[in-house]
Length: 511
Image 1 (cartoon, rainbow, N blue to C red):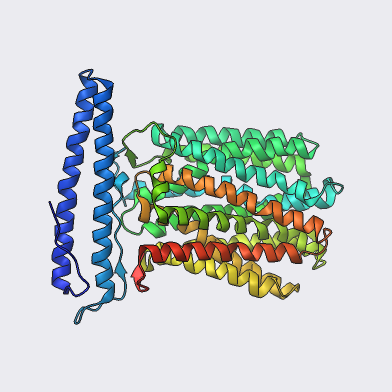
Image 2 (image 1 turned 90 degrees about the horizontal axis):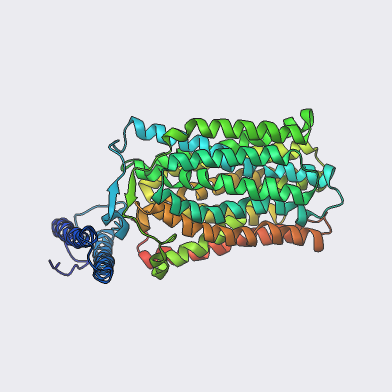
């Protein structure tokens, strides 16, 4: 089936007709893919030669990939011409529609309908899982403050920061494997296994007395366990909604902000009243029990046809995806800096109490919840990539305007409010952008690739900031560290703009 060329002069009626032809072509080509797949399945069932089965598989992959690119190109041209707006056809936001290869090869994993009551139970389960897994990681600033000022005052800031950094890096490395496992095994079981490892890690960490021991338990072991609810919680929500997808994902991902908010205050209070060991034991038990309780609802709705690769490397051939990976590396590098350094900055520079410093982290996490929900609602209206660009610009603005030139209480609160809101919106919309642009069914695998980017971001973020604080600032002058921190979202913004204009140069287009 062939499609006529599309031009920007087409009328609204012609655009509608062209879109309908495009969809019919997509259906026909999808049937062709199914026929090739049937050949593959038949050859396996009849004991056909491996060589012939492999050839059919390759034909399936090539046909699907080529078809997808043609459909995406033509859909983009159609929607760009809508964005151009012909006479008599008023459109506030045109929509760029992406047809992903993975979605053509997806199959239903359950008979539960999208957008229904069960879908909202899944969102609640993801909310709780992220609240404990990422929330605990977001609250590490309180532990860093305690280690740096009380328990290990002789250790450098850079060394202590590696506990939290290792925690996040292992979550990313484990996330690559978790993405593969989520496509091949029951995510409910994987989530439960992660819950147990998380609990054991913190309970074990409560008996540790050195930085190295804490790096192994609170850092490495916890990061490994948290990678399962991290991947499942960020990739599952988008699969369960065809309407209000951005809002549903925003609600689920706001769990990490809510967790960071109350976990920061609770951890500070537990350390003050019970001591650090018992604070870790209580945290380990609560996180394990709560995540285990919601694991039965942590299930996927769509699964791709099984592949043997841990990561779908074909995505790396897409220039848009490479720009996306680079942008997310710098975004994640910027994410943890204020959370980790604001508590000690409040004590050392602003001469406030330790509890005041932890309250700044609580406030930042609270605003990140607002940002996640607000962006979740707006993403369905203006487009997730557009909002990702806007929030990244806002994060850079907050650091450059309020934190770089000033070291007052008022401007520090402004940084906390602006950056908290912006960074919450960024992390909330990342999975929505990935699903919208690159395909819904293989989102766990896509998130696995993103976790490689997150890993790089983890190395680019807190360790260099802490090294600058130790080496240049002598643990008292945060200027160089803050400047470095502010440049990270600027770099992320540049890559996102390149990705956005690679997709379309039209400004008033929903992407």
